[in-house]
Amino acid sequence: MAGTIVAVFWAILVSFLAVVLVRLAQTLRATTRLVAEVTEQAVPLLADASATVRSAQTQLDKVDAIASDVQEVTSNASALSTTVASTFGGPLVKVAAFGYGVRQALGRRTAPEPEPEPARGRSSVRRTVIVGRTVPSARGRKRDRRNPRGQKD
Image (cartoon, rainbow, N blue to C red; front, side, top):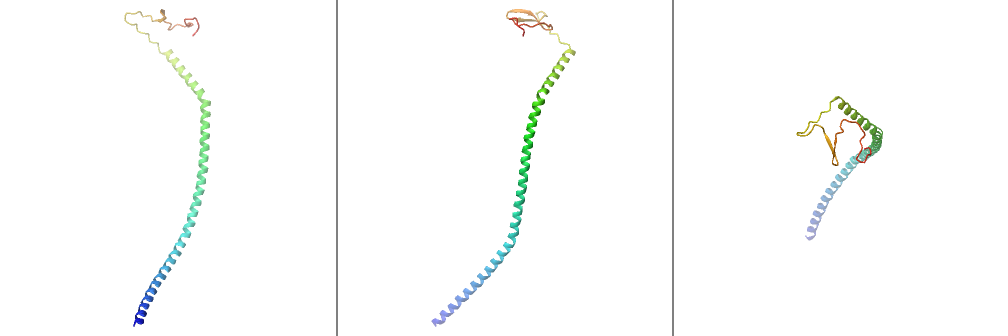
């Protein structure tokens, strides 16, 4: 009887292990199939990724070339700006100043100079005081101007 019980337990154990092994075999087949499918899909994806990386590297090389060209153009424009400013800047300022002077001269020539209004209780002749002396105004007169030491201003 003990032998029969051991044989039954042994048969149950073997059948249980057989079911486990069958399920394990099915899992391994499914895993193998999944790995094969992933490999089939991964190889083209890796090839596409490699092509994309190569294309990006080509584009980066082009952008680098463009950036260096832009840097060269910028330095050339800066040099040109400096050259133009130094070449034409001084003469243009002089021409503008001359034009301003001519306009001022023509404006004074065409517009009459307003006469100063006499102050209340004072004479209408304007006088300038220099170091305690009163001298007539030199406005409107053309003569050599000399400082108190007798030298020309």
